[in-house]
Image 1 (cartoon, rainbow, N blue to C red):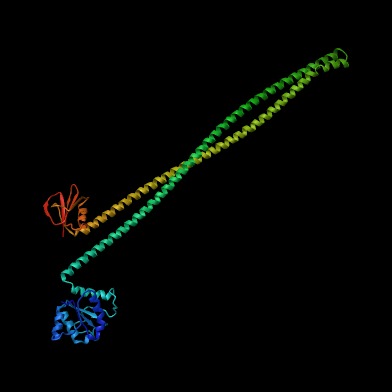
Image 2 (image 1 turned 90 degrees about the horizontal axis):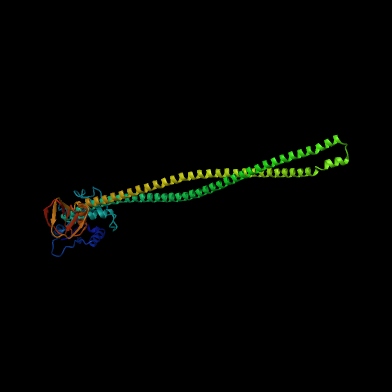
Length: 448
């Protein structure tokens, strides 16, 4: 039986030849050379081939529309339901044969041998539909519908996966940023702790210097008190020396007055009376000078000690100021450490929240994938609830749900039935249809 019958004008033979060669190259048997065998009637011979062919292609051009044979063959093919019209050049409705213009035609006037050309693909769908048996075409259509549905489901799953992957990547980036912030906060906390320790040591040293300064001030005050006491003693000794000197002067003057009254003034008497007290006066003058020298030295020492006490007091005040500044800085650093610790805790909380969101997203993705897989395999099996499959299983394993058991059977080549044990959760797979029996602890399915 011929696959394809060509009806064309002999003037269009060279334009039809590339189409014939393309179909033959694809494995189709084409009747197109109308050379009648000897002893055979041409009309009978043509009718036999047209009747036996699976489809007939009428190639229309300005020449073929005026051919009685081409019009007649096209009319017979249309009545038999096997006509495919092909335009070799554009034609108007007035040029087309009566009754054949309504036939959908593939326009191959501009075709140059490209199999991906839109008109060639249209032409191919038409002759494949004619050549393919109905039951095969129905199965192909069903498979194509399933492929379209599966493609749509796969594209939807890929879109969801891409969205989830983008979300997971975003969460991972956020987690890395939070981790980096946490590490930076930890580094700052360590640096601040080192600064606090340094300030604590500086404060301790300042307190030690303050204590030493206070001790030195106390010692200087004691020295000042001692010098003051020495000065007081010197003043008392000077006062006594002055009293002694006054008494000596009075004692030296009294004999002179008495001698003047009793006897006559004389040089030797006066000399004797006046020169006698001279050594005492010299000694007294020397003692007074020594006392005054010591008093001046004591005053100078007291002045020096007072200046030193003033300097130590100023140093103590400066140390106290620095100590207060160190305490203020330490308090600020403590607050900064608390802030950084809180920031680190917040960053850790955000990281944990991001990890929880990532885990939730992954769980959602797994659930979506499982649901998608379950919906994809649902049409493959006829469910039988509260039913157990009996026989020798080809495989068995522990699963989490009936859907997972069904998916295992769908993915395993040769699996024709499955049974899911509810408690404990076991999945049994069978290579052929087996017997069934009622059992409330099992759910089963058989491949359609």
